[in-house]
Image (cartoon, rainbow, N blue to C red; front, side, top):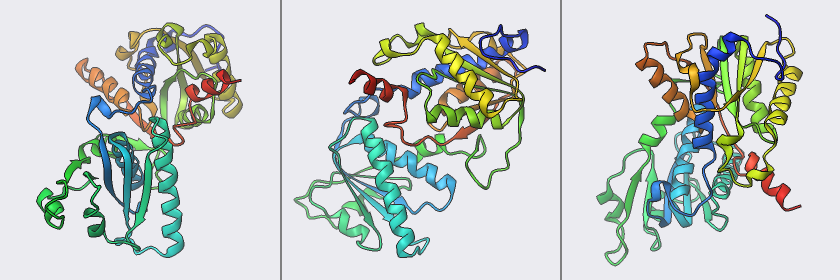
Length: 341
């Protein structure tokens, strides 16, 4: 099979495969481009001062769990967030603790910036320096967030009667939707055995191609043995994007995407194709065997497999790469910087 450059006519097989690419792009458009705002998810009320309990992440799945816990908590807290990091289970030394606390600060700031909460007062507290029970009696505290269930009565047992009662916000359901090794293959997990798929699909706008795009494309190419299909979103699907007038033309986005893939994997056959509807014919394709998404766009891949199951098709293997630096590693951020020139 010959390597196809992005500006050539797509083959019949690739066209039939386009549905999953379209669906992937649909998920990216619907999920990735969430607006920056100061309200919680689905308009949920904000918690002025919150407390989140995290465990020391020593494996990749735990890192992903903490990512979700931080994201969901920051989305709900408006003024101050205490993040309690429990090192008791790992008995980590000082240098290890400091390194991880630094990572938590960086991740928390990135997520807060992503939702426009630049003035959120984030305070990371180590279990080596202060007890959990001390934080529970802080007079300004309103809500507690965590993965494991907590008894509200016990949370309030040590608080003075005149202090507001604490509310517990369980996040386990959110975590289990995104961190599930039985459904997803995590490409950065050193404990994962990764096998290549014959035909793989990946999608996105690929506007102002940046390192986040390149990571996604590189991972997709690495797990493909015969054909990589890249769906690039058509202009009419991007009309509501912020600073849409600065989005590169479709031809430029397709050309740059194809050029990058040919640079890193010159022998891999690729089809860079336009996606101009949410799903198209590809949710009927039997040729695609895998899809690569970022950790924030899992819902789109799950939706694809749900539709395939309804139609009697085999599910796609879902490969996941972790997304970081979400506040700056994005096309919208790049467009914002261009607009300021």
